[in-house]
Each structure stands twice: as C-alpha cells, then as structure tokens.
Amino acid sequence: MSQTARQTTVQGPPLPNIPWEDRPTGSDAVLWRYSANPVIPHDLLPTSNSIFNSAVVPYQGGFAGVFRCDDTRRQMQIHAGKSADGLAWDIQPERIHWLPADPRAAEINAFEYAYDPRVTWIEDRYYITWCNGYHGPTIGVGYTYDFETFYQMDNAFLPFNRNGVLFPRRIGGKYAMLSRPSDNGHTPFGDITYSESPDMIHWGRHRYVMGVTGGWQSTKIGAGPVPIETDEGWLLIYHGVLTSCNGFVYSFGAALLDLDEPWKVLYRSEPYLLAPQAPYERTGDVPNVAFPCAALVDAETGRLAVYYGGADTVTCLAFGYAGEVVEFVKTHSRL
Ligand code: BMA
Image (cartoon, helix red, strand yellow):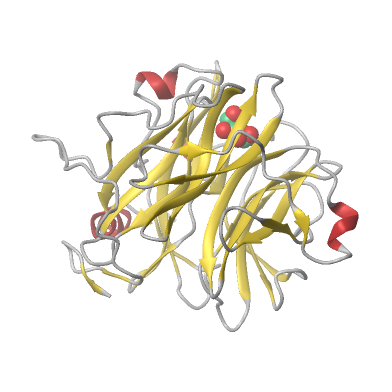
C-alpha cells in the first residue's frame, strides 16, 4: 500500500516493471495511448486473423496472459502467452485445451467458441473468466497455476451472459463476479450485475449494479478489467456503447464501487476516459472499438497500464495514474 500522486491508496503489490511511458508533453489526458500501439499486431501468429480483447497479469517477475485470437477460419479462441516486459509477447500457437476441473465439469467441456478473457490471481491460482459458447454465450470459469495447464470449472451462469469479471479477492467471505446478462446476438442492451459464490461454482445473491445513462454509454455497458482496490472503493474500468447511424461505438470510462457492497455505485464518470480516435481503434474488422479487458497497477507509484482491443483487430495499451483516474471519476460523476 502506498500513496499515489493524488493521495489515493492502491491496494496490492508493487509492480516496478509495469509497462510504462510518461504522459506526452503538453497533454492533460487522464489516460494516454502508448506511442508504439498496437502492442500486439493482428497477425502475430501465422493462423491469427486478429488478436484483441485480451487479459494480462504479473507472473514470475514478468507477465502472462490469455489472448483472444480469432483465427483465419474466424473461429473465436483463447490462447495463453508469456512476456518478459508486457510488450513483446510469445503467444502459444494452439488454443487453450481445458482439462475438466472435476468429473461434472467434464460434461460441459466440449468447445464451441471462446472470447474476451479476463484473468485474476485469487488466493492460490490464476482464475480465468471468458465468454464461453455453451448453447449460447455465457461465462466460462477456469484456472491455471502456470499458464501451461488449464482447468475448466462449470460455467458461472446460464446463457445468455457476457463480460464476466471476478473481483481479485473474496468480499464478505464470498467470491464475487460482475457480469452482463444479454442475448444471443449483438445485444442492443446491457447492464452490469453482481453475483457471489461460496465455491466459484454456485452463483447467487444477484444484485443490480448499474445500467446505461447517455452519450458514450447510452446503449449498453460491461465490466472491463478486474476491479482495482483503492481506499476510495473498487475502481472499475468499464466499456460503454453508443449507437450511431453507422453502428456501435465502444469507449471506456470508470466507476467507483463500494468496497464491501460493490453493487453500490459511489461515482461514475460522465465523460469517457478513452474513445476510438486513433487509426487502429477506428479502422479494423469492427471499426470504432476500444474494449479494455485488463489493467496492471503498481501500488507503489499508482501507475496504471490498461490493455484494450482496438477495432476487434489488435491489442493496445494506455497509461495513467490510478489516483488521477479516481479523482477524474469523482469530479466528473453522474450516477
Ligand atoms: C461485443 C463483443 C466484443 C467486441 C465488441 C465489438 O459484443 O463481441 O468482443 O469487441 O462486441 O464488436
């Protein structure tokens, strides 16, 4: 624990080797893009059509992650990867093949499709949630210790659901997850909800967290990276969608959720933090998409590195200070 630039305390270990670039001279942006974006090109693998909406965590002094790699058949799959610096990635050419975590999980182990992973360390292992095809999209749950062998548990929910994001610790003694009940297509609605579980298998006590407001978050919203614990509340970076005459536009902003009862929203940014404006966010397989799935934070300095998908094609990075994001959300809030 330590103080960031604006006195917000971030809970967590120091991460001195967090990918980082200083704010460009003259800029007053709360989040700024990495000048060498995208960090992962669409064709890093010989078989990849696109690599985007991916999740990264600190691992053994470097970094590891789970990456959405749509292949040249346009199969949506997730692959494991490792990196020394969080920038240059070695991604496995084969998708993750899940071993059933228990005999009953074997019943749902057949692969349909997988996309938009999130990864978090809880207690003794790295948990992965993703959008898992099981007679419709729902929230897959699995874990790994080493990013080599992966175990699949039961899905958290019935279809249709997307954007399942675990909190990085138990809350009130229970595992906690945000999700976004939806339908089978390019859902034109979507609110963020909260559920808890004693065992990571049975989920209940569902609570409504927040829904759409206006502007960049007027069509649907969904949790992004694993929430970051601060002394002001859980810092939740989330995406919001606007429907233009040319289709959906995906931007992202942030909210602060109550530490003990995270379904209570304390503050929520009315302006976005980042909207598709760079060429690699505006042009690609799906234009006008900035879709965050992971954030690294150095509790010592408050430095924040957000990984997000650009235009459903590439993986990008944006930087900021957690304390400044908290301050921005508090001073630009509309619930
Ligand atoms: C959502 C998800 C995301 C994608 C976004 C924009 O419904 O499928 O993976 O980035 O649409 O196409």
